[in-house]
Image (cartoon, rainbow, N blue to C red; front, side, top):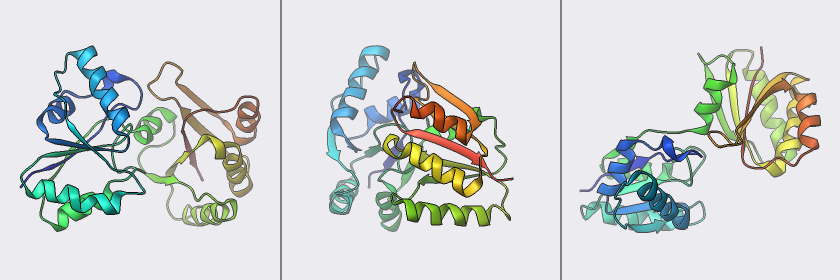
Length: 233
């Protein structure tokens, strides 16, 4: 029986790769990834920059719309004794990315699952936000429809009366201004933190009232996935 390795990869800065992650990617027989081209480029870059000597691997494309179909195939390889690494496009796999269903099935099949920890944009944003880190709630992506989003945020507002925590959400750029407006209408003009391009050259962390951040980002189209953090005290 092989092992399934959950391998975290850099969210921007290539130097954030761990020695253990490199060793694991070199050890495994198969790499399961969202975008095999991106993962192939990552391995090439690691070999060039760090002389990682990761051998050419066999890739399996595994993303939201094919995961149900791919899980039996991956389980079959693991039962044949092959070691498999699961990676996402960036960061820690299964965090708002496909993978947890595969992990769950491996556990059901008594296949060992091993985490190779590393970068996570949610945690990186949290520790540099200046907001309290003793209790935090990761909400991932909010509902796509505005009405559903407001209903969801209303539930968060009600639960915050009992659980004082820092909330972390992912926001795609095309929904960013609208989502900030939703936050403002639900929680009033509170101070929030917006983190983008984390670990990259143009890393930006803005801390301000929602209204001021709406004005700031309305003048320039935000690019890249945003991490938004806030508290309801």
